[in-house]
Image (cartoon, rainbow, N blue to C red; front, side, top):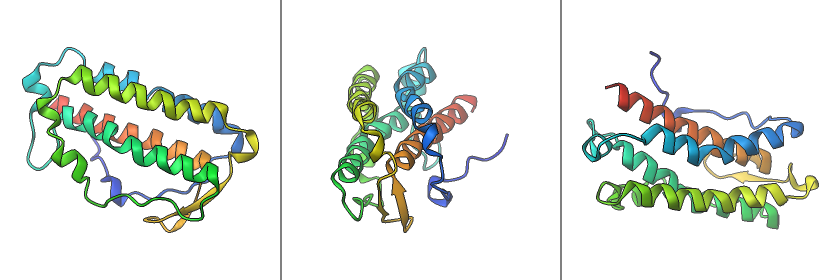
Length: 170
């Protein structure tokens, strides 16, 4: 099996064609049910097991919830016409400090589903002329359009789902 390339080592082209927007939105909408499917029927011990310096599967799920405010904030900024997007904290401190392993998985999953429904609701209602509105992504130092943000969110979901799948195989 190929190694999962670390998120911060990835490059993003931000070249998804405009006509793909409805498809990308469906990928984003599918994050919560895919996460639920990936984690169902696992014991609390399996969910909370850490390997080396990696998050547990439950912490991976918690991270997807933790990052939602950043992604929603960026969407709001893009809709409002900001020039530069809010920066990631660079540490994932919220996830490391959240103690997600002590929480109930169903609470994490329900909160993620609710948050994502709000995000997708904004995308669903977005006027077509805003799909390609852009602002500078601060870490990547390139313009990110709304369609790119949606694709970025879907890729981020896939990344953490792949990490969960890898942990389940171990």
